Amino acid sequence: MNTNRTGGHILVLGIGNLLMGDEGLGVHAIRALEKETLPDGVVSLDGGTGSFLLLEPMQEAKRVILIDAAALDAPIGTVRRLRPRFSSDYPRTLTAHDIGLKDLIDTFYLLGEQPDITLYAVAIDPEQQVGIGLSDEIAAAIPEVVAAILQEVRTGLSSAHLT
Figure 1 (cartoon, one colour):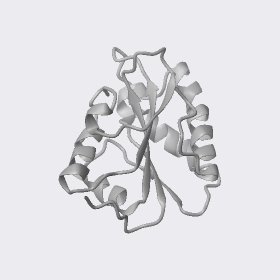
Figure 2 (cartoon, rainbow, N blue to C red):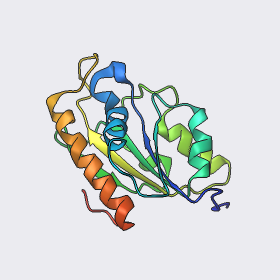
Figure 3 (cartoon, rainbow, N blue to C red):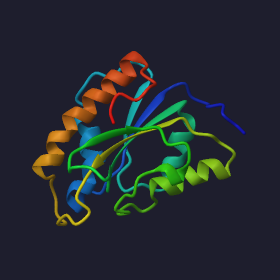
């Protein structure tokens, strides 16, 4: 299994569809994160609705931190830091992406890679109304996500601190 990464950076990747309300949370979180000073070796990327074009930047990173909305069994706006080992360990999303995160992770495994991925999943209402903009609960979760990621990339945190 190939676990060597060609790059030495950490990639923070936000996934989401801005036209789908709270489902766009990953993109909004990346935009907020980009207003902060990131440590050397940390790269942020707006992954939009995802596609296999994201595979290359993910492969080039030694570590990937994903931000995405998910249908969690938790109150809306709950932030969870997860270290899923397999694509089947990822929480259910609303699949408003062109290529879902599970598809990208499965591709890593098919290529013989074992990705070092952390997922910041934020619980959204799967029955939400479609539209531009975030609900108050999700907008309030973004500073928590940004702070947690900044702490993680600045301190090298590797164990879960959110549940």
